[in-house]
Image 1 (cartoon, rainbow, N blue to C red):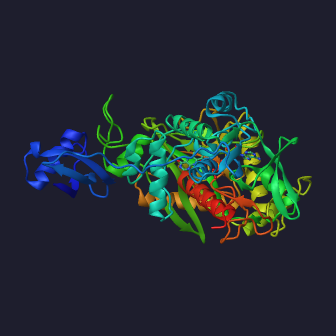
Image 2: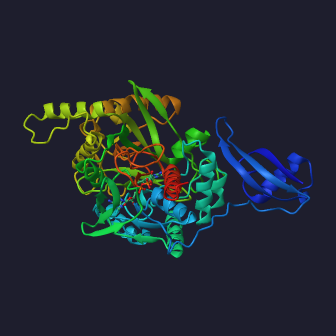
Image 3: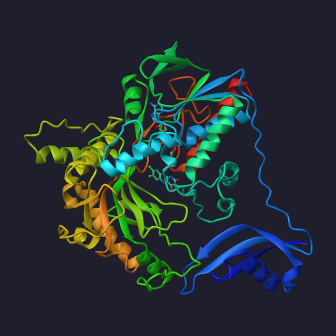
Length: 546
Ligand SMILES: Cc1cc2nc3c(=O)[nH]c(=O)nc-3n(C[C@H](O)[C@H](O)[C@H](O)COP(=O)(O)OP(=O)(O)OC[C@H]3O[C@@H](n4cnc5c(N)ncnc54)[C@H](O)[C@@H]3O)c2cc1C
């Protein structure tokens, strides 16, 4: 007999297959020997009460041989001599999943990626962390796997297209991710595991006849008779194809400028900007699991069976949304700048999430009016300034310029070498420069600064008010033990590249398919991957007149 059942277990009861089998036997009132196996189809933690519970939904095999979970088959075709060829600019999740989908459909993908492969990229990340040196072509955002490779690898999405999400998760498993991601409510891979998965995807693409050019940047579009015919790369070579997928991510500012200069329609897109906040993980555990924040030496307050706790916070403040973003339990704050002289932070965690800190972005929504008002106020403050003033609310690059201006200000306030301007949380609330800063996972270092001098006034004020509100929702969250680090600015794209919803092509330029986060159609690894697949399926339909 096969039986689906839901178990509500203590963390210790859910630890290990023997314990779970025993609980299945108890719930079904059968002997333990009758439970020949099980697999989990859903797992979540309920930490609302004093005692945290693990909820598991399982398929159990009683008195019959146990079966394995069935994984979807993915059949990749040989596309060496395919009739159709599609260029994909950008090897992030959108670009890679588009390439794999094209191969399933018998179309040859040719990927051009400005950055390096995952292994070579590591050296540039080391230089970022150790010397504060930014390689504008190879960093946390640019390179094989895109911004997703050295990320946290959280695989949750707000998208409700469950079938498509499951397909993406199954693909991650096919290329080496742990099967747990198929059933956990908050699946996560970890920075240490992602590079092997990306490498396996590359090997699949190459073995089928797909092509990948690293250190190859799209530098222009080849347009004839109003149709896109191909691209120029590295300012010299030209590649032709039936279609071009533009999956260059939210940090490719030069690409947005290129489109704008060529009069290819782009639009400003509201995004969110703020800071990254780091607490001791033990403190977050103690709030979320109601356990000790100062356990005995060698012990973890939450005990051996619960994962490091996470949180998600949102508040409306003075008509603006303030929300936590990309929370990384047991994580590290990373320098995610893509150009010298700019300071951007983000976060990642290893698969075990075993670092001593919990960090999260905390950001405020920004629209074109906010950006124009900010530039006007800055201009008034510095009447002698030679800085160019950007106040045109019709400028599609206005929000990008705003984002860049804050990043540059943060860089200067930190004192250079990617040292980050920082303040303790309660000090920031009380407008007090911190006399000392707590230790922080951000490797380039922190510099005690008033963040009121770095962040736009409305963002600073909204964050102050939100901190207090969050402290009421999560007692202990509002504390001077937390460090606030500027600036978290690459939350989503500040530009949208429009596309026709029926054809997914740019409305002005046939054969150009804007895709993924940079074009404004995704916000994270899973949604970018889903968008890549969606665009690939559409191209297949159009090339084959289906
Ligand atoms: C440190 C960090 C942690 C993150 N953590 C998470 C997380 O846990 N979960 C999550 O869902 N999301 C996370 N994100 C965000 C996530 O990585 C992105 O949402 C996702 O990667 C977007 O995918 P994409 O393919 O659209 O673009 P990207 O991943 O940005 O990829 C774009 C690619 O295009 C390339 N490119 C740019 N310009 C050109 C050009 N002119 N020519 C050729 N190539 C070009 C870039 O080098 C890059 O490789 C994180 C991001 C960072 C930086």
